Length: 389
Image 1 (cartoon, rainbow, N blue to C red):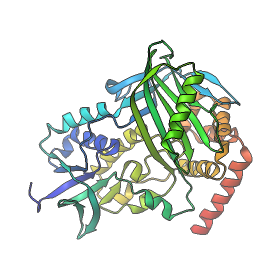
Image 2 (tube, rainbow, N blue to C red):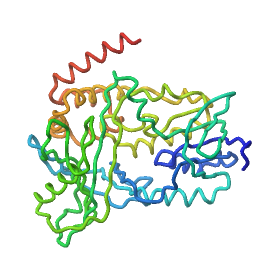
Image 3 (cartoon, one colour):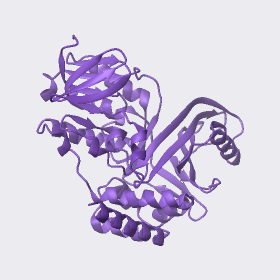
Image 4 (cartoon, rainbow, N blue to C red):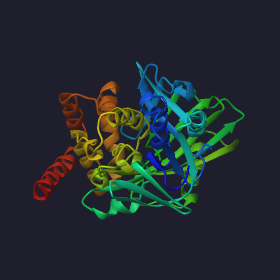
């Protein structure tokens, strides 16, 4: 394809959002006549991240799941419990498996092209979108951008911004240490040091697990601090003889920043760049699965991308939650403990999946502690919104 050719769709970035969207388009006959270009600075083929999500029963990505769990453990000084997931499963997908599955499909589609280049600018002019890379410029009728510029989040300080940052070790032991039927969802028994800090353990066998030290806070730590905490936690579990087979590092934005304000009629931001990350938890994979499905339906009916985003009450809930943790980062353990100790798991998952009833949502919020912090934040943010609009 030569430089003057115009693509129907350009997908910028081949992470989960870009690839899952491309996959959905490849499986829909409507897009068979469309020329679609994916651009990323690297070809994704390594296991650079691990996605987890909860789901009732069978799901779309079950053939790619490395492991699923019927139970989760929640631990803190206020509340600790092994929780049966009942009709739910907590599922793990390794990125390398998703990348291979989708790329193998896209390679067989003549209307898809992949270009390896670093994207510099995305500009709209004369009702077309120009994507400038380090080597050349591409032109598209529509661009779906999943590349997040973290600096834009800081342009509106009234929207609290935390980072979910972590380092994880995939370890292997000679002894059968782990309960492979139970994932440690959050263990706040580690020293909090004025932050929201917890351990996350995903056993894939009695001998193997991903052990991750995670924070919801403003500032990153030195690598040695994350790893020292992992070593200390393993020691407390009685694990001293192990091999580190892989390492994982991540930094996920947690914000209610209105990413949709950057959408135009021909440019749509998707994934974390479009606010698809659940602001209060950092979970992205399940949301991307749902929103990419909605987006494909939208593309077949609509042409103005500014119509795609729909504001929901959960945006406001997340804004309050992040505001509380941003101002009082040390209360995270207490907040999550109150949620998990006072509510049925199914209602918690529905609340976090943004599929709960209004009454169910209110019941969860009324049981969240410390209540006065959330009440104060709700009032202050309502006042801000009234002044703004």
